[in-house]
Length: 175
Image 1 (cartoon, rainbow, N blue to C red):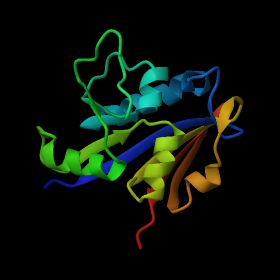
Image 2: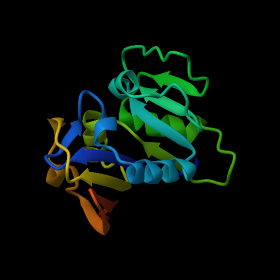
Image 3: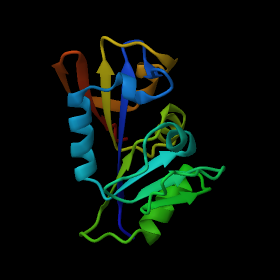
C-alpha cells in the first residue's frame, strides 16, 4: 500500500477566526491564494468535510476532491472529480491508501482543505504530517480556534511575514 502524506492548509484571522461573513474567503489574500494554489499543484487529491463543501466554492477542482460527510452534499454544478464518503478520518486515509489510483510513483499527497472541526480532529488523531497556517494580522471574524492548540504536536519550521499575513509552516513532531 502506498503511504499517504497529509498536508493541511488553513487561513485564520488575527483572533484565530476561521471565517469572515461565513466563509474563509474574507480572511484570504492574493498571496495566500497563490500559496494555496502551489500546494494544490503538488497534491494528488483534496480532502474536505461536508460543511466546507457547503460553504466554500468547490464546484471545480483541478484534482480529485474527496468529501468526508455523513450528510449528502450537492455541489451545483456537479464537480465531476468529487466523491463523497461517510467514514472516519482514519478510515478515509486507509481508503485513499488502498484505492486511490496514483498516476505518479507513491507516496500519495493528500491536501486537507477542511474546516477547523475536521482539521482539529485529524490533528488530534495524528493524521496530519504538515500544516501550512496563514494568519491574516488585519482581519477578525467568526468561529475562532486556538492557534496554540491547533499547532500543539507540531514544530514550526518556517515563518514569513508578507503583510498583512504571516505564513507559517509546521511539521508534525516525531516521537
